[in-house]
Length: 340
Ligand code: NAD
Ligand code: LMR
Image 1 (cartoon, rainbow, N blue to C red):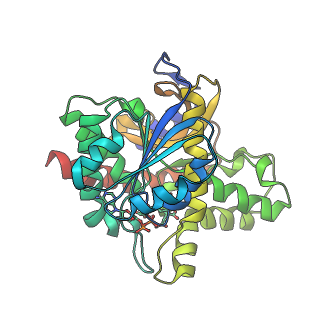
Image 2 (image 1 turned 120 degrees about the vertical axis):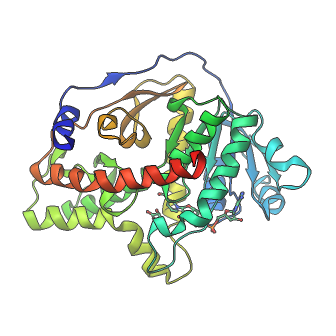
């Protein structure tokens, strides 16, 4: 049944889900977890983003200092910092057009992303409760791991508050795309900006499936498998090299800044803004897998169009088959946390 569904999803072209409306000229972006390893460089990059009028930084510690520091940079946006005291979270997110969530603990060597669930699921759930109450219409981008589970957590919280709109909630998988582009360019001696690689599935180990067969490159079998393995395990490479001091922060900030900018471009009415991202998706829903990363066209109201996977090699079909049961488990775990 899974096999049949995969082939259904491979063919068929893009399916149109939603239509667009509001277009705004300047945006408020809130970062929750803004004092952390990702939060600080992400805030720095976004301070340079001309689409942003207000950059609202929230964390349980240190945001007043981070905000004061960034606020001296001579770009137009206003930077504000909030901590939990005096309804800080409420003020940080009220009126936000986009909320980006990098709050939570990172991995140490030997841990899987799923090992972060016990700590991070509760953090994301609490932040989602606040978002559902104070900014239910914001586009919400979840970075906190395990993304395969934290996105379903946010969705279930929004359902509980009767404000769920599946097209507004995203899991950020952009770092997998950034890595794929860089790793391929290193092998092929090309400019990474010309290497647009679709990465589908989820954001952990075997659930990360790069579609290298869709590139205009020929790889030896060995290269193809080694590249796939490296993209699937890029996060581990950094965790190992940081040797207990955390996981990817700088490359992640770059990736999140890129994804946030794509949301901003779409909010401002630009067409054909397409990013791979982990969303509520029909592609494998008949198999009980309700969230899946694939290319998504972004618009003012979020996910406008979810693209099917296109033509895959036999190897990529095998990779998808290996990803699905893992994704299913991760999604069920997230849903269970909220629904019980
Ligand atoms: P970090 O520990 O450096 O920073 C996390 C920040 O979250 C800290 O400043 C902390 O105070 C804050 N925080 C904790 N609880 C909070 C709460 N309830 N409300 C607001 N802020 C809170 O960690 P990091 O390196 O920035 O990583 C953050 C998360 O991002 C981790 O879960 C990591 O696994 C994940 N991550 C995801 C990707 C991806 O591709 N999606 C890539 C890298 C890291
Ligand atoms: C990554 O891919 O770098 C992140 O998900 C962090 C991690 O734990 O590997």
